[in-house]
Image 1 (cartoon, one colour):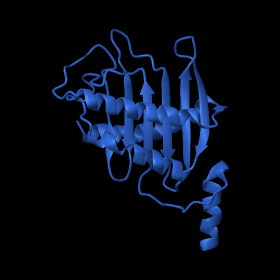
Image 2: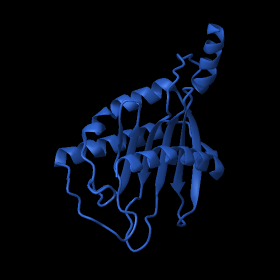
Image 3: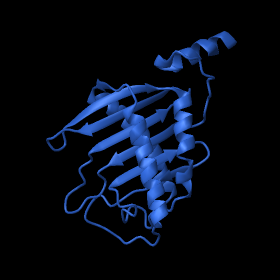
Length: 194
């Protein structure tokens, strides 16, 4: 039986070729980044969406969509990602969990970056949001300048991680399947934190 898990670990580790201990988790882990979240009279135009996803068997992948020059036309990419890389990124993003969130949820882009970051691990979950349309509400909680800086550093950390990956072009369907999985996790979070 141990041999089966070792073979499975090599398979899951993807292109790295290094066997990693298989870690079964109850719920998938997720890190996502969306640039272009603030709307106005019309809906926001998402410039980039990034999804780092670990399923319950430990397999990790990264999907992204990037806006082309024409509005609402995107290029889609995917990359394998090792479990150890995923854990390192989660660890580096640990400081985010202590940052304030907008109140009411989605009422104001309190970090003023037109960017949403979500981190969903086994131990903690955190996600900032912004108004996607005409309704803007002043937040009762606002971050200090150093909290804004910490958020900006976290955003850059995720974007830098994306830059070092070997992204391969993929179809829209592949990204949308990953997006639906991520949406299920974030929707549960939104319902719990209303």
